Amino acid sequence: MTSSHRPFGLPAAVTAAVSLLAVAGCSSPDAAASVVVPSPPAAEAAFCQALAKELPDTVAGLERSDPEPGSELTAGWGDGAIVLRCGVPRPERMSDPKAQGIGANGVDWMLERPEGGGPRFTTTYRKTYVEVTLGERYTHDMTPLADLADPVRKTVPSSL
Image: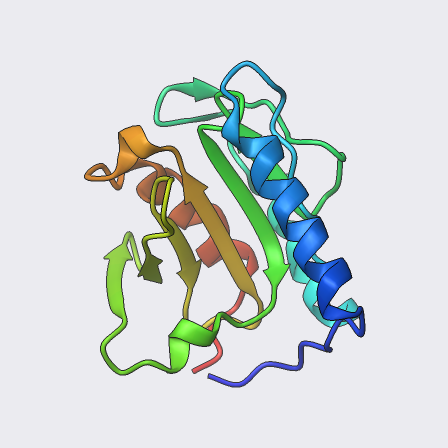
């Protein structure tokens, strides 16, 4: 699994502050979801733009409600209960041979369990990485991945 992701080139303090703001923006159920928009290379962004056109209006029974700032690289359902980001950098955890994975309708995902939130999944063996973060209520429910698998499979080619 190789990727052509470029480093952001921002100082660590700026990156940490942006990440902290993004987490804080997603932590309140009453606030609109807020996420950091990825900045993939042009070829990967093209896959993400194609994916954006294929994403469903509902996922796991939740209506589409995209996070701020608006972008073709991000999508959301249920006011932040499910958030998709396309063109994210390759997660460091993907190099761990003990990393957990799951398959959903022909798409393989790596599972991460960040503290203080629900599970986060990142596609594996695709020409760009698609990340889906789920609210805590989805800790044991992978239904959202099944709903998103067809659009991902259709628009983001396998890297194998």
